[in-house]
Image 1 (cartoon, rainbow, N blue to C red):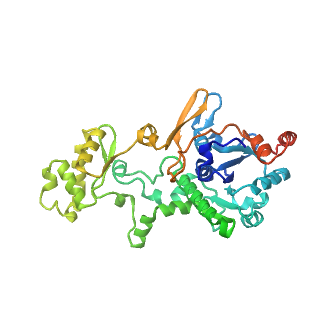
Image 2 (image 1 turned 60 degrees about the vertical axis):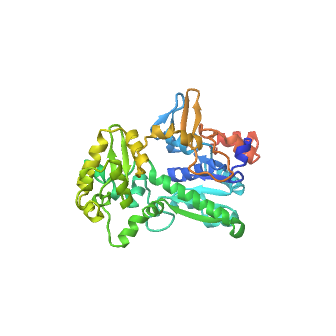
Length: 409
């Protein structure tokens, strides 16, 4: 394998080897988290064409056109190819797993037997191995065999039923349930998967390896805990009822902000910021129950006040008055943020001779750990085969050539 830098050697997972057999976003993101924590993550793809995710739009690059999503998910990983349906491929996988700490897999349960992917048998054979299964609905239960994409797993968690709400629902009252752009649900599933595997890793000294079964649906339902709790109390949240009684999203002349007025103290600070207008100080407006019945009127005035001011002006006034109000940041705002740059959350990486891209590194920092570094992007399928099969496993160049000619790697 390639020589580690001093910073990488000091990273939290510097001694962890992860074998990632994941085609979906959730499994790939779990591997990315571990790679950014310093683990050696060896991603296995099908020989020649690689994973389907390589071709998901939008594509970036000049000569080599690769999916932006695939590039993001596989930064810092070691890219290898292996045909697991072949006998030689199974032998090589066993050699890899003998050196691995974690095995990430999102193969459908019905297809695992043909590949020899039994979590129980693999954990028994490799006593310290953590088998991390990452599936849309988990590895058992009536939905375990279902295939699903982002739209399925997100809406199955119930959150999509409540979107849009607030100002968006007022503007588009007939809009059907939505999901956020991109792969938010699968990213949440990948985050839960990585943390679950790391929890299992802490238990290895006392209990050995084990199987970890992660459901992306479960991970997203857990994020809706407040909605589920309210349902248990007899309150069914809907799109119209989920919005703030007053406050929430305000449109300024050049963008959006959000203001929270949940407490009496916050309301009083807002009145002071607005120089105590008559509509906010009239009879009954000092009582939360009365204000709640006049939410539409309050929002009308707040939106009119914000509409002819810039976001920066509104934020400046709110900060001076200690009103809980914040700007809605665009992707460009975040990628150029001096704060996020200083924390090392946004980093730059050379994609090819003509393109340098910015992307998030890691969403939290551990004490004494080095700043996360974007070391390299994923190249062509099997880019690191020599490092994996010769460098790590010790096979000869002749063996690699034979396996390559047979389509094993």
